Structures are given as C-alpha cells and as structure tokens.
Image 1 (cartoon, rainbow, N blue to C red):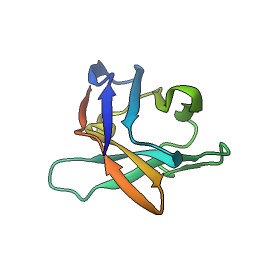
Image 2 (image 1 turned 135 degrees about the vertical axis):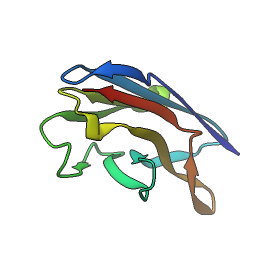
Image 3 (image 1 turned 180 degrees about the vertical axis):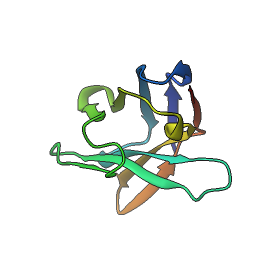
Image 4 (image 1 turned 180 degrees about the horizontal axis):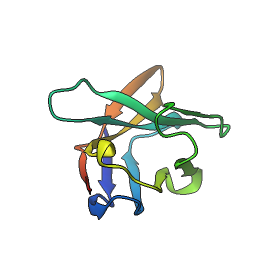
Amino acid sequence: QVQLVESGGGLVQAGGSLRLSCAASGSIFSINAMGWYRQAPGKQRELVATITSSDNTNYADSVKGRFTISRDNAKNTVYLQMNSLKPEDTAVYYCNAYVTIPPAQYDYWGQGTQVTVSS
C-alpha cells in the first residue's frame, strides 16, 4: 500500500503564491511519475502538471508560466510552486503517483488540499 500526504494549501489573495507538497510512503519500488490535478466545484478533475522520474514535465495551458512542478526522488516528494494565482485557480488540488510495485503498476491519489484564491 502507498500513502500520499499533501500539504501547503490555504487561502491567498490574487497575485499571491502557494507551494504544495506531496510525500509518498509505503511499499514503493519506484515512482514512475507524479503529478497534481485539481477539481473546482461543479467541474471535472483536470490535470495541472506532471513530472516523470527523468524530470520531464507537462503543464496545463492555464498554468504554464505561473506554476512549476518539481520532485525530490530521494524523499519521494513532489512539489507545486504556484505563483501569480488567480481566482480561477481555486479548487481542491490532488496529488497523484504512478507507482511500480512488482509485478504491476498502480495509480494512487492523495486526499486533496484546498486552495482558495480571493479577488
């Protein structure tokens, strides 16, 4: 079993910054990729950013240039630095990890952390 523990959400004014962290623990052989998704009220969950084990990154168009995803492989931790936040960034942010536990791969999700951006 794998646990993902998120931290760093909160309330911030438009234009401000927040940094989310997500630490993975448990029976992990290797983490293939980690990422952040978000879900606003009444909307579907959407991709924010992902990062592979070789540090290849992918961002949603809406956050490019404002958000940066990074990871610390030694700590099995992924970060999301969010700058120039906008009210439309308000959502519950979920951490995701695609993990190898031989002989298979599994998708795991965190419990979510609320990010609220006031105008």
